[in-house]
Amino acid sequence: MPEQSAQIAALKSGQIDLMFPSAESRLQLKGDSNIGTVQVNSTNTVRLNINTNRKPFDNPDVRRAISLAIDRAAVAQGAFLGEAVPSAQVPPSYTWAPKMNTMKYHKHDVAQAKALLAKAGYPNGFEVNLNHLAGYATYLDRFAELLKTQLAQVGIKAKLEQRDPSLYFRSDIGVPTNVKAKGYGIMAAGWSADYPTPAGYLQVLVDGRLILPSGNSNYSELNSKEINDLIDKAALETDPTKNAAIWTEINKLVMENASLLPFTADKALNYRNPRLTNVFYNEYYGYIDWAGVGVQA
Image (cartoon, rainbow, N blue to C red; front, side, top):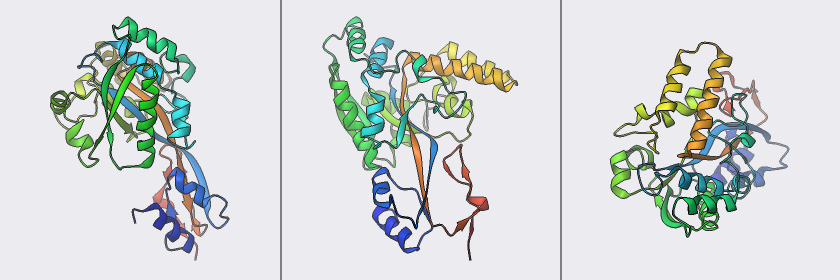
């Protein structure tokens, strides 16, 4: 039942007991006393990956200018209809996430973005293709359009390139030789960690030793010795507090490098029939723990 409208009708009629609606569908369900609603902070983050091997993106100031050009609060409101929050790669709901106000290139500052572009030799900006999933979710379409508008304010003219969702991660942006051959510069992606740990959120995305010939997740091909060494240090640190501190430093370095530009973390919306019992929401993943759910007779 892929259509949200069909899911809503089925939920209201009792044909199904649970759905995870889009922000648009929430408006149709809001206020229905027969349907239980829970909003949980999701682990899913949406970001841009910048190809560090292609000019002008091999210049950190260009990447930082892109980050400064983006108004993350406007993206959360406009693309996600308010059902998201500005975020680093580690969502703000975690205690080991960096504070947003401590990341100097993670704010919205058009003047500083223009200054960095001029410093890098691009006072009038440049043209670039922005690759994103086609027809996957309406919020991604709004996200791409908003980015195009915001980048234009600093002189970066983005052409939106829609890609096949069935191939996008596996054999399109997930294959470095393909990224190079097609000259990809900016690639939109999302991430939801398999394990709710700092390593789960960051290592496969930023460890230069994990760049794979296919099925690659380090789309920016970031390979920093400083970051790689800190990852090794974290792997050997058994004290949870000290381990989290190392990963916080890694996250900070990744944000300053600006090869990976996270924007928002979703708010997971869960709608259910009140007849469901023993419903436990896993705060790590934003979904119900299916093992314990029952149905009232």
